[in-house]
Length: 158
Image (cartoon, rainbow, N blue to C red; front, top):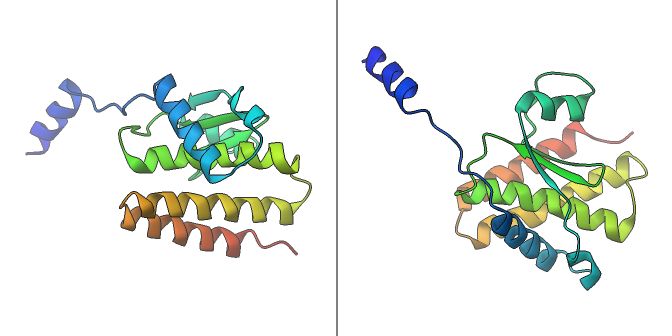
């Protein structure tokens, strides 16, 4: 049985569904609808970079090769994992979460301190939770809520 599974993985590799430009823009519009701002903001969505787990972790943790991050908004660009399957609601919700950070920066400016960062993260999780819940993805919404609470505890600002 193990040999059969190994053969299936070798002959039929599993790839994540790619993110199309139209799909990225549609998710961008949904994020805009959740975080209303100036219509000018719609003219130039941030670039979306599909990247490996290792490269994403290095961006987040200054050369630390492993982490559990699946998306990031950094230097006016969005980064998401190359293993995300954009035919699923959870992958699109991750991208939506990062777009929310883009809109937050446009409205509020760059993050100034730990408290700002934590407040913005909680707001992005809250919006992501609401979108998943409205999409009927109750289990994923609960997982996002649990992640948000964990982040709030771990990232407490002294």
